[in-house]
Length: 192
Image 1 (cartoon, one colour):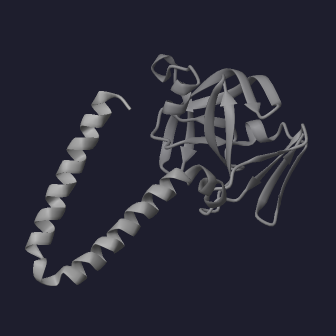
Image 2 (image 1 turned 90 degrees about the vertical axis):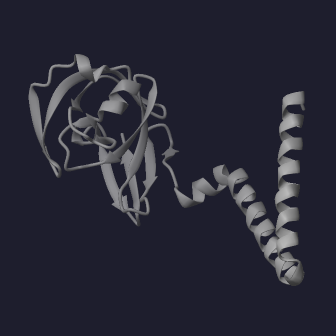
């Protein structure tokens, strides 16, 4: 532990002791009740620390993710909100998509396009798309690489939206590359 960490720890310990001392002096006539409340808050604090430390393990149960089945297939569990989410590497950057069979193309939001190395400010928005939020302008782009685990494609077409799309949509422009798309028992299965 370096000297800065020790100084911070000593400061926090002194501050905590001062607050605890003030609290006990103010409540000296109810020390039994104060001790009980302090024990409850200590357990809550320890529980929060344990949850934060175990979040990576808990996350897989709370928010299940995609699983490769063999070299040419993937299973995607339905999320709590009823949608299916896939993470693809677009031009080497991980991008989260909502599977949307109602979307014609793979649609990148502005922020996801930036992560994939595409500058939305430099694009020419000649197309348009009708969305739940109204009509938005779109620009067609060609992606160097799109990878879903070991399944990799090059030169795929996609569109970048000029609207306020919160994420990205994985439409039929990409899904049609799979020979089989099936939903059974809350699991989406894509097979090449």
